[in-house]
Length: 287
Image (tube, rainbow, N blue to C red; front, side, top):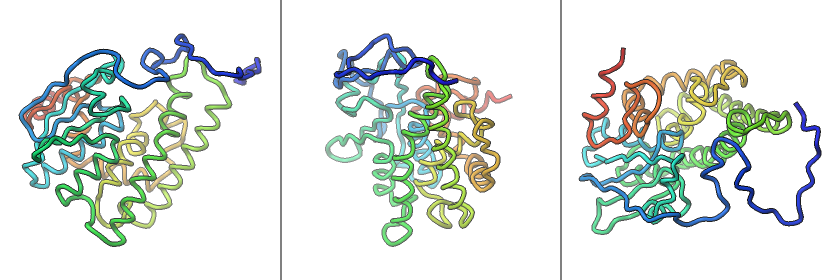
């Protein structure tokens, strides 16, 4: 439906705390911590503070892929961050990510801890550190980074735009849903045309570009985001569907996508991960 009441923007915008919507209680126009809270720290070189949203899934899939590839020094502790409770505004979390968004990583593998925030930056950091899932030089590396950064730019339109107005806004309005549905379908078409020419986004090899894009578009195609697969007619993007299904079948992806997840079926919940056994225990509960 169209809004029957025209909106005239005020001369100076002010924050309306009662603006509604699923995430109204945690969104605010200022940065910085709201309370003092130290982050927990485990025994492994990498400390991840996250949630199994698409941006969080990118990183846990990367860690599980590294471990599956034999990089035993990629062991990590993954601590769930409940964004609905505002845990991303604790002083410890803000010290790792001043933008107060998941995921946030503390790399303690060197002499001094290194903070890494933004999911694409974390993927790139880990790929370079382990020499994995990213060519060291040449056209394949550039193409991987092309698609990695494309996804980082696309996510605000898919999640913050389409996902918000279609699934989370307190009221549904025709104009924003149409606007962002059009952009979501354009992005799917971009991917579909690329994947018609090669098995993975950067070419013949699976890379961090696939991990980043699969977490969003792959899960959308598989019906896991916003209950919108039918609305967007995702099944018509045959090459996206092929790619999404093949990546979903990878054992490391099956493991990584349930880390820091605290909802859904019991066998798909591993709120905190400290060893492979935590994931094994959850998967063993599958019917």
